[in-house]
Figure 1 (tube, rainbow, N blue to C red):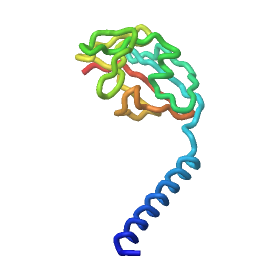
Figure 2 (cartoon, helix red, strand yellow; figure 1 turned 90 degrees about the vertical axis):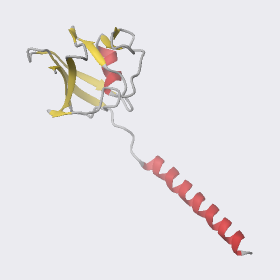
Figure 3 (cartoon, rainbow, N blue to C red; figure 1 turned 120 degrees about the horizontal axis):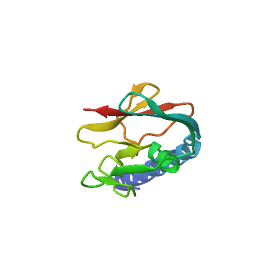
Figure 4 (cartoon, rainbow, N blue to C red; figure 1 turned 135 degrees about the vertical axis):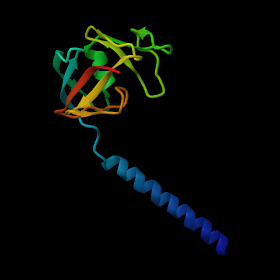
Length: 141
């Protein structure tokens, strides 16, 4: 066997080994958990107007769970309220209205807190964890 053939076979074996490794890893990595969390919605007067224990299943993000339990208004491409929540901004869905509270995204928005820590992820990317307390807080800019 020539050096070139040995090199090619070595590369093939390395790629097969890496493929097997990643395949085995995907079988052994635990799935996202399912569970429940406390959802709180806070108005502009710092009053909690909704507090519920919500359940989630593997793979759901906060938006999915909120859509199941609340009537939402999301930002359209022009940031007007869209009750179908059909538009995805580059960062995901933007909630402008929930539980009777409406923001305008220009002078106010809903800040997201998980276990009293500000979260920079949006509702389309935040995955709840069992036992979390997640708050949407009306916030003026």
